[in-house]
Amino acid sequence: EDDSDLITVPRRNNTISQRARNQGISAKHIIDKNQSKISKIMKNRSETGMDTKCNSKELKELMLKNISDNSSASKRAINDRAEEKFGGSIDVICSKGHFSYVYSSNLYCEAMKGNITCIAFRQSH
Image (cartoon, rainbow, N blue to C red; front, side, top):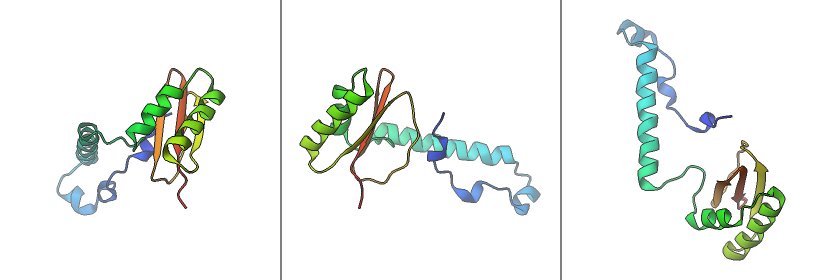
């Protein structure tokens, strides 16, 4: 399963207007143009260290140190260490393989080690 639904593409180019058709602009041209924008955004995020699935290097390191082969043990270890380090309640979900999710948080991270994927986040209120 992919997360392509998480990448926002500017809406103004998603349809071909009559004017664009009259000017000979094809759907392929518009799609190629958007792909270029997405590539630039992803490249910039990579170069700046910005990660759409993690906004805390410290949390990611903590998670990777505490993910084991057991998803239940991993979530408990990450939860204990993260609450100790960051204070307050930190929610943690771990599972074998990939999963899709949506949440709102000022502290969040997804980390994967082996076949275990975990997300940890502080709930926004």
